[in-house]
Length: 80
Image (tube, rainbow, N blue to C red; front, side):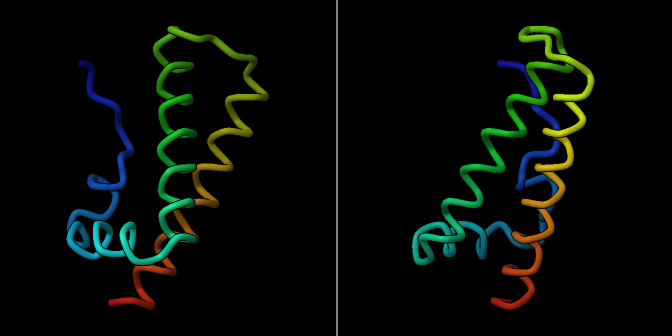
């Protein structure tokens, strides 16, 4: 299996236990984490040309990933 950059564990290595706990206890956080994972994987597939997309679409996906990461970061900070 290839390495996919920007996984939540890499983005927030200090918060692995908190991420796990919030995924179990907070449905909204779990949904955000799953959506982040899906967008991140789609970006990786586009970057590696497994599933090429138009440049504008890739830019939109990157923007969405950044928005999700920001919201996840806020939730992690509030729960710490």
